[in-house]
Structures are given as C-alpha cells and as structure tokens.
Length: 188
Image 1 (cartoon, rainbow, N blue to C red):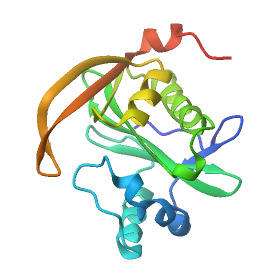
Image 2 (cartoon, rainbow, N blue to C red; image 1 turned 90 degrees about the horizontal axis):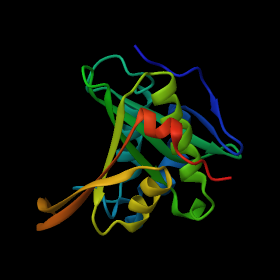
Image 3 (spheres, rainbow, N blue to C red; image 1 turned 90 degrees about the vertical axis):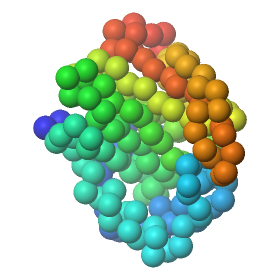
C-alpha cells in the first residue's frame, strides 16, 4: 500500500484526502459547464451527484492495489479549489495516470502546477513510480499546457481515437519517467 503522510504542504496549498465536508466547495466547480467541458460523458452535476462524487473520492486516500485511485483535495485558504489524482495503472510497470480538476476562478496563478508537482513528487519519490502519464482531448489547451509545465513530454497524438460528444476526437498522451522527473529543470 502507498499512502502519503497527510497533509502534503506546498508554498501555498495543502493536499489532503477529500472529506464529506468538502461538498459545497466541490459542487461549486462540478456544476460548471466550463469545468466538465473536456470530460468524457460528463455533464454539470447536481448537488446530489456531487455528493455521490465526494463520497466516492473520500474513499480514495491510498493506492492499495492496481486500479486504485488516490484523489487529493487541493486546499487554499480553507477552500477546496480542485483535486489531483493518481490512478495506479500497472503494478509490474510501476505506472500511474495523472488527473486533475480545478475551479476556473483559481486559474492563472500556477496553483494547479504546484499541486500536481507535489503529487508527482510523492508518486516518484515515495511510491516508487517509474512512469506517470496523462491524457487529454487535443483541443484541451489548458490541460496540455499544464502537463508540459510539469515536464511531461507529448508522446502521442491519437487521431480520431475516441467518441466525444458523438464525434471522433483526437487525444494527446503526455508522460514523464522518474529519472526525467528528478533531473528536470525546476522553474524558479
């Protein structure tokens, strides 16, 4: 089992497990069309759907077995502004997939980069991951930029590879290896 020592603190943020008390903050962004725009099959959520989502995320506090998801609330000034997650995709290959969702009102300040950097650091340094990848719709420029800022390289451009809103869509795949993570130039 791999579980962070909670909380994970950065210069401006606290990362910790999601709790049922986070419902109001999570619902504030899950109900927004601009937040779910690039999520496959997602629609703005009702409060009850967000409650179910928060309940599910509250149980995602460790990587116990292949397929598990570690989802952390990203807290700034006592408000959950988003989540970052690692999905354990392969035990034998020590691979995980990175995911993230943030309230747009907190964009443009490097907070998503700060949170994802902290989670990736834990994944490589504490959980012993070898490779982390992330995927996004090819038109999701914000996600592609974030993964690039994290030092991830674009490994693939899958052309018309999945159905999105009833149309074939392109997908980008970004990835970074543990040794690349450790040797990357850290912005400062």
